[in-house]
Image 1 (cartoon, rainbow, N blue to C red):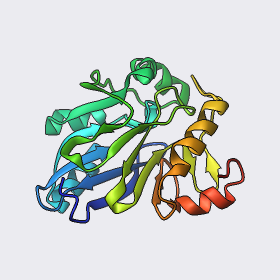
Image 2 (cartoon, rainbow, N blue to C red):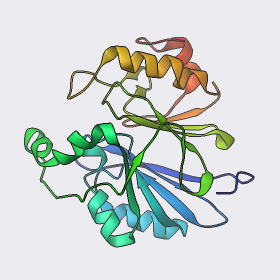
Image 3 (tube, one colour):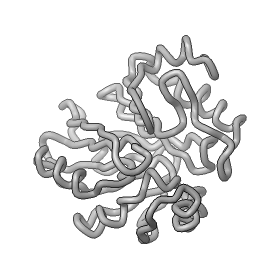
Image 4 (spheres, rainbow, N blue to C red):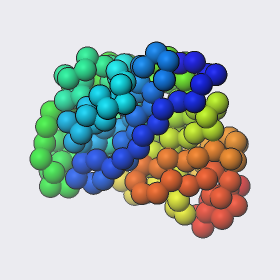
Length: 213
């Protein structure tokens, strides 16, 4: 993506657990990323169409069911590739179990096409993937430096942090991820969280009740 132009971004809640799904698009090439399509694939497709964008990669902050329930339908409809960190494969492979536990209808999802790695450049060169484990072993955040935009998934919230009492969660890891990776980014960055309202990174650094810089 062209770093000289402002990226197109739209975030909206989807699915039974209202995960924030984000579309990131290049206004010049019209190529886009879809992050965490946790449901409502037809609505996501409608928004892509309305924005005039073509999704090339579907990327995931982690593999809890509410962040990838619609990934298979999105791939089927668009041909876009599915991307996940390898350490969350056990969660992806156990989608049916997760759905039963949360009483959510199960829809099979194909295996990821590509395993994300730390500091990997995202499709089209618009940003970078950061491995920020703790909420899950393979949790990722996505950083778009030119736009001062951080997609934090369920690692960091407005006035909160991700749960660490689910499968593979680790409080010491999430604390390290937030302090050593996220809080070292631009404090003016807008943080799009996995659920709920956006926040500013500097506000969390100074006043987050769980982990401060």
